[in-house]
Image 1: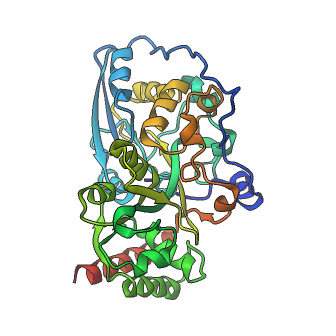
Image 2: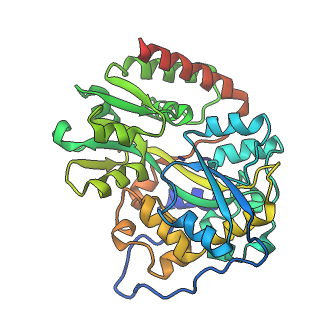
Length: 369
């Protein structure tokens, strides 16, 4: 899910090893009572159309919003930024809220596909961790509000692998079925990083070298998973799945077993943020603003983070002790300073997008053979 540089502030975070958000629960951080979110008047009987990633809200996030406002939510899901863009670039079919990742926000802004946000209607913006504000892909958050953040790493069935999978070399050498994520920029970016290039290289020769590097090491890849690698892992179709962190942690929680694990690659990995935006052509912009404010409420934000097991940009939820302390202490969700220094972001590179797309098509074709 989920991915571009968050700005000078976050660059300093990565270089200097400062924490992105509070990562440790303390005895003093007892759960605080927070007032429930109250919907502004006048929305009764209306409809909100949401387009989001799968398994990306708590069980009651949508139903509670419907009850609070007396409205109906039509909730659709997509499986990649590229499929989201393909659907919206030809004209908005009626969505009021969509959830693109950072580099896709930048792309959609450049094409005039996103509405400007009216923060006078979103008082809960004050709850966001300062690090996630004013990113270079959207200065002053004029068009986007941070939703969740995380990494792309390895989900694995340790019963089958016999050991934790912590490096790309282990993945490449594994004698068993492996799934890669349907994320061209992320997977190729990792390859570029592994061979010593900028993960956001715009050099055709370097992208081609990364392509060939991946093809040579793809003999154990049985599927390119469209945001369902955790399902294939659970079903036993693969033993290792390159996946979004939260998807694997959800699998681990649902299983309540010791079979599964997640690790951030020791060589480095992709760090991303997903964002709430209002697309041009939205049918109910006022209700979309109310929804964003609702999501930024401390309890609502905590419920989502506790369910999805992704990092929360909601500092008020963290400060109120509403985030599960075990999640805050988990370095696979809130990485250590040492790990943060190895993470990278995927940036929008319009001049090289075709090179990446062509390389990914060739990789997938080679794997399918």
